[in-house]
Length: 306
Image (cartoon, rainbow, N blue to C red):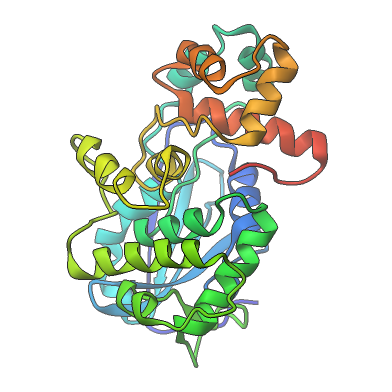
């Protein structure tokens, strides 16, 4: 049960149908950072900080199923109109599924996946920094393992919320400054990965690096990340896919993607072959990845990939 957090303000946000809302919630639920975000009764909710104001955000499918209802709770509610854009990016509301699905359906394998799950979106992120942290933690780790470690990071460096919207929302995600300076000894990650994480946090804290990039040429920020020790193409493409809303981002070395592609075409044995095969899905490779991950999740009975 959601407890009222005053003041609050709501807005309806339109999208291009179809929209597979349940799949979006399932993706977030499998990866949610304990204490910071939750999925409760068909509603996504999280603690946020926006323009120096704190509060919480809830997003749900509006009655009728043709719009989303976003509600900002607490002092951050004064920015509800400005929150529409980040919420729209987070839930991929600017997508045109008919165009995307029609393009992907030209491939016989993806045609069957699109037919089963029309309107599948690429789940985004409220914060580029938060998503980058999650992605680095998730290098060569299972979805569940990464979620556990990120939860530990929050308790080491996050901000505790005393009066929250819901009992599950007890923390705000660490700021770049806090994470860069935190003691992450015995957090459950290799030392080199801890160094990578804190190096990234320090770069964001100093203003040297911005991870909330959604417009213009992403080449510079891609190169900037790739130049950092411990960050490779998979990490950068996953961030591009979800945080930067690049519809053609392709985390080529993802093991779930590679395994499923090889199952479809046993001749695909090496990464360059997988990359060449994915060229057929341009300019919507991020959506191809989501469809493949969902097919793997259905086959395994859980959310795999990403």
